[in-house]
Length: 432
Image: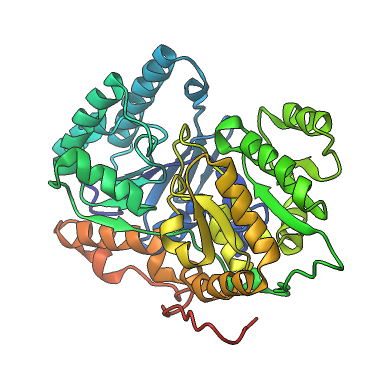
């Protein structure tokens, strides 16, 4: 593909209301429905910086199409993700082929793509027609604690070729994903970069970092995310039953939507915990922020059956100065370990004991809270963001292509979020 007049980039994104993000971005605002800076907004910044003609294809079950100067936004449904295995594979195959032809007909120079839409190996044809591919991977390739099925092993074998030869570099949101790529390629893969979700420092405005006063208030435990069995909501209900038996001055709050909202409410009522295990359903941004501020501990009990991504709830809990309780199923654990209590996957007793210790051991709680505060700066750092990592790869592509070299040299840069800093885990003192 050759486009000497203007760099052309296609971005196939994870599910997001990309039009809402775009409208707020054009006004110089972050989309108020998200705490983190969305990857779609990162892409708009990136495309503007390179003066690129861009096309964002959002993986969201919504109708809509936006054409605005150099920005084009389209929604394509991924309904096959919720269907049986045959329909799923057929749908993903068609989605991959459609994406390949879209990139070709758009005369793209670069395709940036998440794992939602495509079989990676089918994108291997694009470099042959001059389109460079940058995969950005937000979930593990298979559940970390489960062996891939026979079909999955075949697919990963094919994908290993793409990770060796079919892309420029690979951007991943966790070390767990990196380790899986290393495994399927036997260490022979393209360079891998790691990024973390990015937040504005203003997210901290008026955050109340406080200790638990057992005599004046209940101990508040928060779950935020999809209300599904694989996300550990019933495991958490079992933990709550046992916790209440020993420490009744507590409230477990569940915030989020999902197929199990009503069933979980019924199960909590049946257990006699309607007032202590509260299923709130969907929470608007301001309401969810209040739930974070009211909480003492954030629990992420994702089970071994789920293909977990970074899970931004972990980052948001750390930013709020709250200890995290989770297992290694959650890849985000590796970058917040000092602020977390790690338990064995799917271990009800482990989660119970971790929460009980945080509720009753003031020194332990205080140290985890201190560590959380020390770790939060990484989520305000531009250099660690998706945008920064993808920008570096795009610049590399431009430098190596004479027709595009001017973009790699002259693309305007915006101010960084913050400079990098190292966490301080000093055991004494408490900065808010």
